Amino acid sequence: QAQLVESGGGLVQPGGSLRLSCAASGNMFSINVMGWYRQAPGKERELVADVTREGSTNYVESVKGRFIISRDNAKNTVYLQMTSLKPEDTAVYFCNCGYYNFRGVYYSQFWGQGTQVTVSS
Image (cartoon, rainbow, N blue to C red):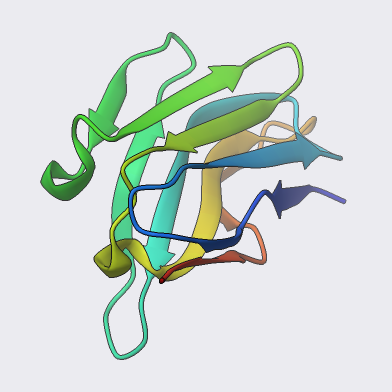
């Protein structure tokens, strides 16, 4: 059974840094795009950043210059290095990917359980 397991969330002061990790495992033959979304209370879930298997990245405007997404294909893991964190970055962060299983079936939106990031003094 496929799964995404996030780690690295927590409480940090404004201006601080956190690094999120998301490890994919199970019935995943080939993973395409991996990304991070976030959802703050009362708001819709939004894409924060994603990265293709080849390493092309995409960021929401509000995190450009502060967050860096990367992935290790050998480990099926995606990371989100967050710096200069602001209170408005507070949200539950979800890992997401699209993948083919070993039977060739494609799952376009597969989610992790989420990890809380709180930026507060």
